[in-house]
Amino acid sequence: MPGVVVSVAVKPGDIVAAGQPLLVIESMKLETTLAAPRDGVVAEIPFAAGDSFGLKDVLAQLAPEED
Image (cartoon, rainbow, N blue to C red; front, side, top):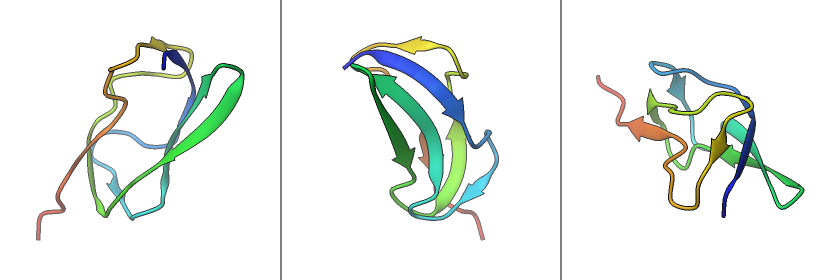
């Protein structure tokens, strides 16, 4: 569902571990922390704090870690 990005904890190029918070969103007056589903490198965070997003927008993309 649509909402607003409250805060962003990472930036492209950051290495993240599974479960690490990526961003906090608010939708229907409920704040939700979105965490990394797996280890990887942040490839893209297309929204900044305060930005609105739509129903099918991608909020974060991870790439595999390179050895």
